[in-house]
Image 1 (spheres, rainbow, N blue to C red):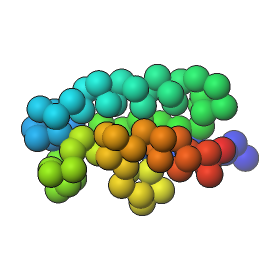
Image 2: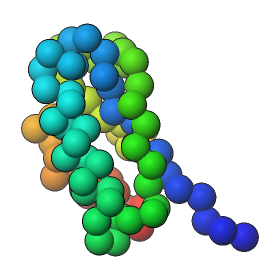
Image 3: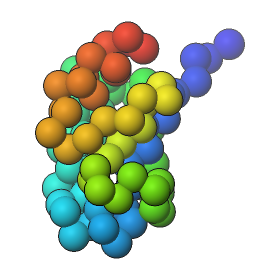
Length: 81
């Protein structure tokens, strides 16, 4: 049976949008389309996740990743590969 892709959720609510969610989601998308991550993850843009003061944020494996934590995101993805 084919392995299913894991999801990476990125908030695109109004507060996150004003704090750079578009660029943050773009960086994540670029990362997911390259190297060992290609085809193993799916980027899902969501509405508000109620983490407005931390925004923009992403969720991977039930772990909240802030904009400044792109390295943390990569370590979470490495656990899944």
